[in-house]
Image 1 (tube, rainbow, N blue to C red):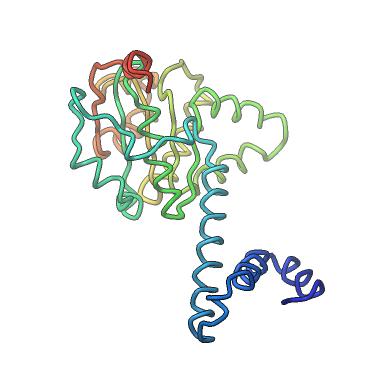
Image 2: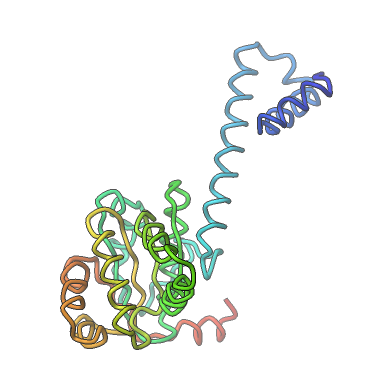
Length: 247
């Protein structure tokens, strides 16, 4: 049995899982009868799994997903026209390694946010840093950053480096010239180096108009609207369906 001083040192080294595993082994006489090599293997497997689980939970929490319970197995396909084979491929997260992006387009209630969160959560399970944010909140954060000198640049640098960024309610509100320039700079840095998931009601042909028909708008559309995996969510209202079937 390890003494209190050893336990203290292990906790100081952020290795409390070691203590738990040793205590479990001490409480199981059949495990104590195992060979040293077998006990070490069990010990390493346990600590590795606990460390992995803790990291995944931290990634999911820091992602601030709108629906943290969203899951790839919870996607409803019947009658929605979704390409199941494509989505199954996307859930393997290889598109992130290739710095590709996704556009989820459909009306309010079509399940865009849930699917985006399921994709983001799967990325977390692959130990990929992810963040979810609504476009109005992102623009508000950018506006608030103007109060402190240099904070807008730090904000831009921070969002530029996130491997998978989910932007919900894309193009839902009008933008000022400074906000549009911020988005242009953000996507200029993110394109070809990271992945983005857009949740939007607007079709590809509407993007430039919603982005004030500017030069920056054309650049953003050129980088994303024509090259991303474009998924149309269909017209089924998933909020109504889930409420009716008590899902």
